[in-house]
Image (tube, rainbow, N blue to C red):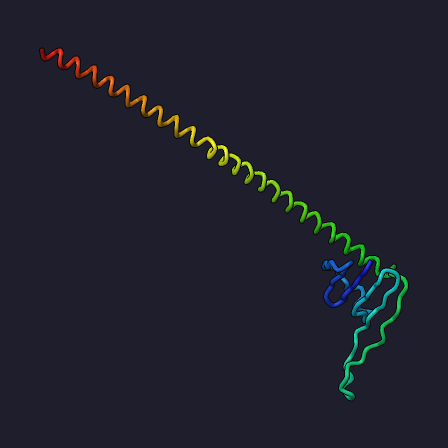
Length: 150
């Protein structure tokens, strides 16, 4: 497991994934960062500015072979990571539900469009039948009118 703890940024990265974690417990120890490389690591210390020599002076990094003093920060990272995963899972559920709605809507459109030629044909047949009935009624009416005139 690769761990980076950046004190001033209140950031912990585990295998490249960053979460905000309160690192104030390290500030009093002048620890700027902790780097952990699976089985060993190093502590990077804050430096100071040497005004006379006009250079930044830093304590040398300290080699460490035990991450346990920092395990609380790694545990806090895991808590934040689980929260983030839960939020992402909830968002994916919402997206999936929305996609189901979209797919159902698209299916209704597909069915409508597939049946449209049949509906149009039935409409045309009904209109032709109605027109024929009107023609028949008009013919009967004309026949009755012509008989009544005679």
